[in-house]
Amino acid sequence: MVQELTLHIPTDWNDVSLDRYLKLQNLLKQYADDEEATTAVLMVELCGLDAEYLKQVSIEDFLMLKNELSKFITRTDYELQRFVKWDGVEYGFEPNLSQMSYGAYLDISKFSSIAIDDNWVKIMNILYRPVTRKNGDMYEIEPYTLKDRTDIIRKWGMDIHFGTLFFFLLLSTDLVSSIPNFLKEVEHLPNIKQTLLKSGQLTRRLLNLPEETSRSSRK
Image (cartoon, rainbow, N blue to C red; front, side, top):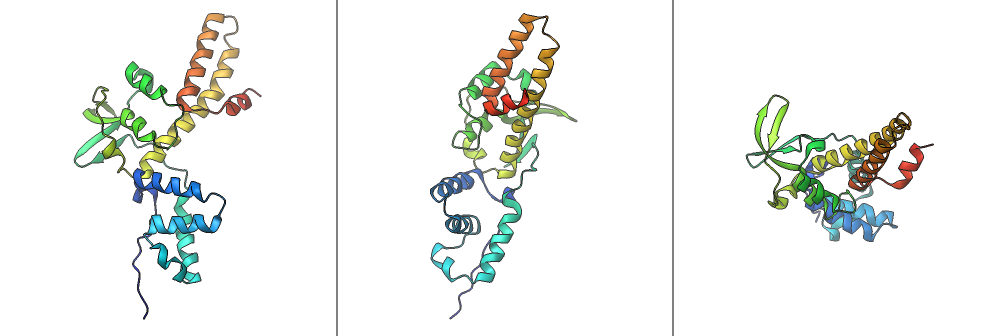
């Protein structure tokens, strides 16, 4: 008797929540050196294919699933989403990072890195807060407090999370390339130069910028 299986094949990271992604990430670490096992984990976790039926899938269907997953799984073109609507509430990304509250900056800088790991949801909890006022492109969000909305943010699609991460990666790249060039123009102002150097170090710490990137930018 042939058994029919109904699978949900995601076509974009917006179909995958942060909770689901973190679980997938932890499983993939266990099979990092086994390509076949890695593919199997993706099919089980992303498509809902029961592990016991995996070996019964035809080669044709197996390759089809693998091809469909590969179409979106390596995408890196997600943009920052300034607004996220969830359960009737609109959340806004920190409108001006240079003017964020000291408490928000301090809490973010406590993390040793900005990466999509178990701490990522805490960073997003700081950066995204309910919109209180909006006028065209201008908007305000709730003042920063320690209010915990992580259970909500864990449900957001990974397109939102990747968009935020890529935003910081691009920002860090721009900062590293521009700060050394600007310093050449202020050689005669040692106090300003020292201040900018310290600022650059803090920025690299905040954005988890690899030291190798910093060195390469000075070549």
